[in-house]
Length: 581
Ligand code: CA
Image 1: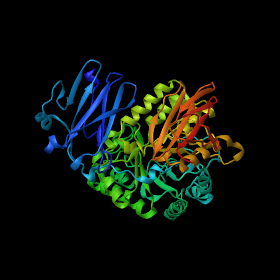
Image 2: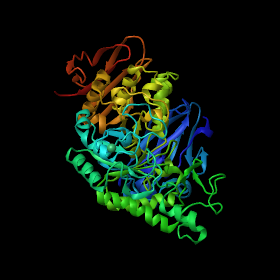
Image 3: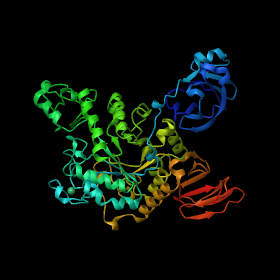
Image 4: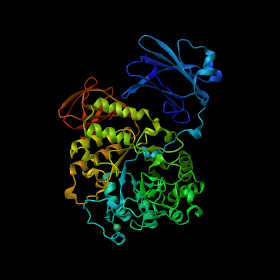
């Protein structure tokens, strides 16, 4: 066996409490190297009486490794354990001390792996509603101009191509006026990019954290927006920019004037006073001089920002926060942030902007999830650019699944594009079929889908600012077929519980076919996606009596447990399978 590849670590994504009673255990090994893994576990204080064993099931493979898993309900909430790993030629015990051919009972107390105790307060509880949500991301300046009286000066004509500093007049009232559109689309949550006072069109350089930007509306407009959304069953989350402020934020202006005499001097990372922008005499976000980096370790600033987090939940009744540049802010801050937010609204959704592996933020004491850009990247590679095959795609998705806990995977914000990326349809060079397949995957996969405004009608755009074009409201310019595809998939996701809450398992049927099953209680939903130029004939083995083609709405004949299916090029099929009609 390749012992170097074998890995396990308690209190990580390899061993965590899924709920107050259950511990998930994962073990990693080299690909196709391990034949069998047995988990031996018990309570270390009464080892001999409590000892049990269970065979760990093969879970999945990523690009490099195989993963095995087990789910354990320990007696007395305590878990001590070790592994018996069987390869082609040898069988070894694996404990914290490494590998051995023999293991004495008395060694287990010292060397066994431990999840010492499930303290319920430490268990990562994610908000239940997020599992049922389909998010819609809105960039307010470009969604709809609902109030011409609050427009900035020199707004461009709606629909002109945006430049970095263009204004078009979109606002909060614009979102309110288009709520019917969102309801018809079927989404039940929105995430708006920042709406607080700021000189820019994107508002990622906040100058007043407690004031709605006057070009967008005011506190009253925002309260109305959230109330009307809630009446329609739509949740609302806002965007908090706590990594940096805007240049004209009162505290930074005070530092510019008074230097060390300013009580706000330590709210920033000032290298040298007086403040200069060339060279930069203060730390910023990504060298942007308009965005001085905040020192979130400063107690006064922390108090100020945590109050902001609480204020908008209390005042506007929002359902959570998306956190900008979340990984450049200290963990201490985020731990306190979670306490304050969850105390104010226990089911608030906290989703960080982190583009990479995010485990250090996702163990239950900071965020609930991240914007799942690793998911975005693998979907673009496979569906849009077609530069990996379906095996690599599965492996990439598996790597993402294995790098987080199950409860985090269940509420990950899965996106294909955003205000910070190319539009998916531009990545696929305008090929709508590819977007359809990718969104079919996104809307049937584990986690919470997030649709970037306009993607559902076929909008294109390159990197910022091109991906921030005005929402097209001329229906003649909409791709009606694509929109209808989105509406159908959202409807299906909302209707069939396995697609929101079911387990997820790949089924390997045929090359170029992405296929998986999601199971919840006694219902299964099968998804088959033909990402290929050729028609595919498939035999699907089912152990249930009833099979419904969800898209077409007709039931399918099952003969001796087998269903024959034909999928046309670049088409997908979704089946509901159960034992009764
Ligand atoms: Ca306006």
